[in-house]
Image (cartoon, rainbow, N blue to C red; front, side, top):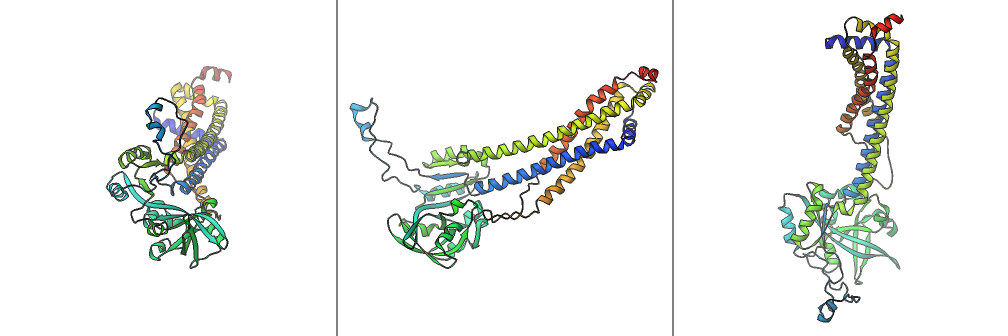
Length: 419
């Protein structure tokens, strides 16, 4: 039979039982709506949490790790070369913490096509003087322009301006919690003492808030040159080079290459944040599992409705087969009914899911730990909508296949004789 005739008959059967059809379509619509909303919200939440860590973490960190001396004096004695050495006396004294030939390394990174950008950094442990009390802290010397471009530094500035540490000599940006401890505001002077006992006054030009409270209690930022002056090091003294790649997945391989090429320790982001990535993967997996479960439940509803329709339309099926429709034609009619319900309910579910996601995305979400987040996070990834409509059609097709197969095997002679 022609496709148009089959579609016309399927449409007539749908209209004849429009209430049951509507119930089945609503089930699919609800499932797709919740599927889209759940995935959009969970993906947005993952992006938010990833941003807290990954946006502030370099893809590759070049540094010199403090290690015990690998050449112990006892190993040089011929008498004990084949013995097990219990004595390890030479410690990590005089280990070079700065990166050797840092200028040449940064020049090489600038010409590397795999690299999106890099940012030099110096980290120094200091004590912030609060009267008679010394508060332990960390001063990070950064290139504020590179940090803002690669690691969104300016997004975390809640008061003041990040570029001021380049413009104002001997200036500093404090973590918001550290600033509260010291009872200072923009324009005030803080005193800090280095590990060698030297004291330096620095002017506060801003406050930042990372969203991690313990981090904000100890961290502070100033320019690279200021930290070099504080710790009494020359202008080429750099302890870290933070690298951001074009493709984050290349980080483990590139880190190994840099370790051999630059003769420095290299840590990739996957190694540094393995547990965090596992948490994001598990949350995403749970979202997909719940969404697909909703679709399967809706499929059982369609299955039951089509089963009831077959029992109620035995006469119509018998007449169709008696007038020349084959079992295959009858099967196609019921599959068209199932796919029609799935398509209508799925498309409506996509629209409702988009609307509900947009509504959630406008709800205020204010928390002191995340100053840059104003509303609940939503990810409008088109892939979610594609997956939703595909699963909708697959689920409804499978739900309609078994009743359609049963209808195709009905013997019209038995039905008509029974009447």
